[in-house]
Length: 357
Image (cartoon, rainbow, N blue to C red; front, top):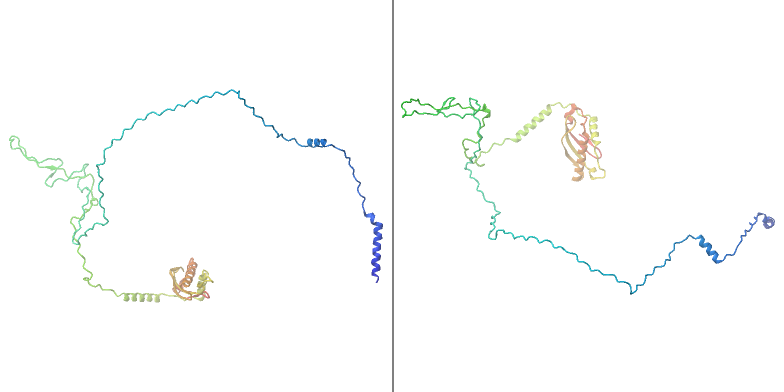
């Protein structure tokens, strides 16, 4: 192949084409603009600049020159200051000293001696009788057979009852002419302003006679030994009677597996076990009693436990107890005819599986 001939021919063709057509692609240069120039002097140029600039305020202000004082200037007359009169306050009246009595001779009373020891009181002897203080008895109206506007005191026993009050009189022996019969003393019947019944009569506030002193009780050693009842025999009799009543009462058919599962599921729904704690490895058995409405009666007791320490056992028991009390709500739904079978319930809370007895 003649590769060199091809390259040489292409180069010659390119050079010839550029020479022939190179000027066709160049644009014509723009015409040159020429402006007129005139000569200006420096004064004219400064005048033109000053005319274009804005006027500035004048800052170069000449300071005034103070006039010189000559010796022939007239002296100003000097006036003396007039003293200001000061008024003295009026003389105050002298206060006479207080003529108080001399208390130097008086001596303060001696303070009473106070001791920390309390006075010893002698206890009364056992044979001393205690006297009850007499209380003031208010006057009460006594029951009378007659009611009058004004109360009348009860007459003396030897006085005759009459509406007219008379005093006892004896005839005068010196007067022989006047014959007078002796008169007996009379007084009106006792009366009160209101009818007093037996209910209004107040009982005496104090006893009429003092009580006899209390005799010392006999010592414990002198008392005869009281016969102690046989408590064990009574307890055995009560247990036997309770067992007899339980055996005589109809118990009905036992709970089915479905009824047990419903009870277990109801409690398990409220049972919360912390998987990460030690209580999740503890199995507890709790027992409790139910009423006929299916509600818990009495406390929930811990019967037994397996695994873990005492703290873990307490935590697991509290979780089981909360589950039983929380899920009862309106009462567990159990057949009433089988109440004797589900009255006392034991539930084993095992994190792996929960069993109901």
